[in-house]
Length: 76
Image 1: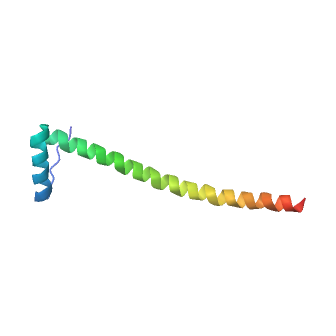
Image 2: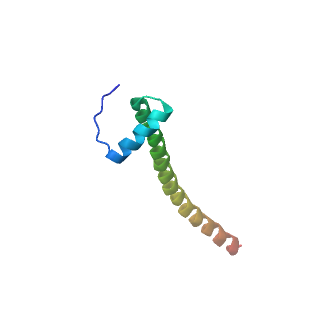
Image 3: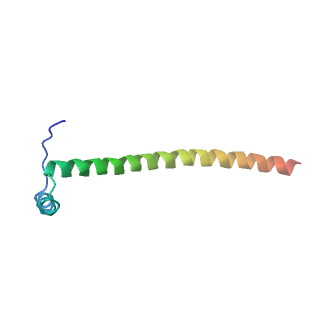
């Protein structure tokens, strides 16, 4: 396990302390779970962007192929 030192805004720290006192889990566990959740959100957003880009590439190629097929149909 790695040790990390970080600075937290006073308002976020205060809110976190209030939550921790009511749910009774260690601050370290809470922060680890929060980072793990945020990492999952970021991975999904990265994947979504990648899929959109790839989808656009395929869409453009598909439209080109469709136009080619339409030209073939009209030639017959």
